[in-house]
Image (tube, rainbow, N blue to C red):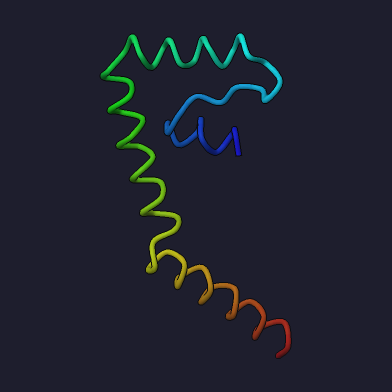
Length: 72
């Protein structure tokens, strides 16, 4: 999940057991409104492209096609 968040430019991933890194990430976001906006926009684009009804339907269509091909 952390890799996906960072690759999508949708946030800052920190280790779950590192409160210092968590605070540093929060401070970065507090200090940089433009980064917050950019990350929010990137997150929305990622979710729309990955989890929208159209994207999910396309993924299922591809999966079902592969399963049908295997049985043929």
